[in-house]
Length: 554
Image (tube, rainbow, N blue to C red):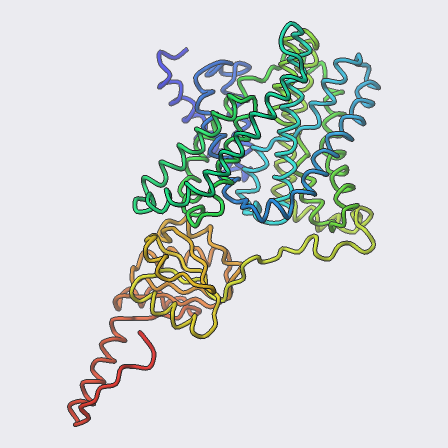
């Protein structure tokens, strides 16, 4: 259809822009627009792409960057705090969904082996889609978001084991399933150990050196994510696991927010190709003939899976709001579900009707669950009284608290000459600070027991939006750059920050722009310094030759 891959990519992007514009006009979520683009571009409609095209490579890059960004958000102490509930919920939901789903599918008239395939396919949810939705809602670092990502990663590990077993059983002349699993586990352990050692002894020093160039830091982040994804895939693990681990390895460094902010736009473009590849793999042959079973199974996934999660989390002491929002993360089937069924089809263990059925369930559940997650708070507010049955009479009081791991009295932007003096003055008064700057040496100069540091450029809107404004009472910008102050102010207003705001203006024009917001305190360092100098000169001229320095630094 196209003479080159370049023309093909151009057609995909044009189609995505048109459908995305229509979705915005109709006030529909962008994720739904992506799904529509994938279906339209696939062989079922416009045939812009077909299964096996080079779009797959771009899709894998998008997935790797997406999961890398998830890992960046989850440092080790967060993983420890949600690891148990993620394990119990992930395994428990897979087991119960498989058992209950198998009974339903048998009742619908399917044979035992296809019923087993379909039941297993219904248990896995899409890490990629859920992470995209939670990222857009800024809920990845909330408790339900951390738990959801945790049990989705557990599911990814389980689906890898399932596919290894299916391939080994379906092709008995190859290595035994147990031997394959052992080899994969050993390779995975060695891989994780190597990454852990690199994260402990190599990466911090390397990033300290690379941070002098933001371009090199970004390039390293992308290379690190994609290379670990590739290594993980070659070891028999999924590339998603490798990309996620790559992010976790950098999550404890002060450069994670800067890396994440600069990769967000690239993620949003590249992840489009995941949906294109997904659309190219969908088959609609015999799908309409399976409409009734598809609706029944879709209802089970959309309602039954969240209920299973809410029961498990309720028994563990979590409150209904956290368990409900986390439960919505399993209200759809995964791209792995389609891969699993396609694998069974290639082995002759399921027929084309089963493939069409799971495709239909995927389209229905992914689309509807997108709306469920985007409007989760509104839905919860309406049905909250009916969800009390999923909560203990005396739930664990600490289980659903969005605790502030690092509460700050102030976030100070800029650790240079002026910012350094402000920081030292506030620390002398016992304040706990988060200091932000894109100069790694300046950050080293202000380190202390009450000072946390974060590397990044606040003049980049994506990075400014990633700052933990909910963890502080005030924000101070000590950088005399008008654009930096304006970006910061716009970001604070976008997220309805209600604390104190102190910004710096180098001249009268900038001061007038910033002071238009009545809640902003504007500092003019040059004017203040000049006034102080004049007052000191005045004292000297009047006969007092001793000019004392001001009590407080300016």
